[in-house]
Image (cartoon, rainbow, N blue to C red; front, side, top):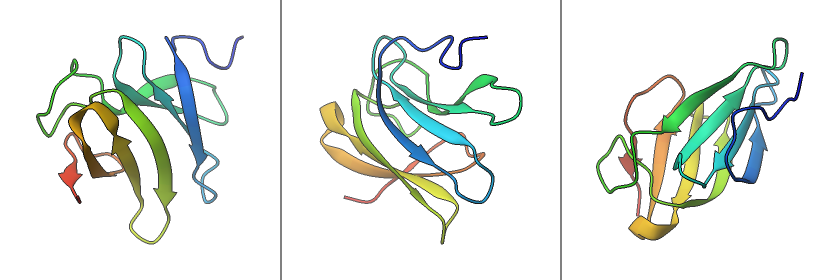
Length: 98
């Protein structure tokens, strides 16, 4: 099985060191952050994936990502929206930080 099956244009990666979950920016047509389960290699959406845009449930050409273990969240450079968002793991929307 291909680990990155279902990704259109992976461009950045971070890891949750507590769970081993891998988070990948998928910039292509998805405008999302995908998560890869370390055991099953299943690829699901962790953030965005609701089309390109500036709404709190969307990402717009995400360009960088960091896993913040103190808040159990992803910090994402939302490049085309010109902002930085925090997306708590399991949430359906993000919060604009800057």
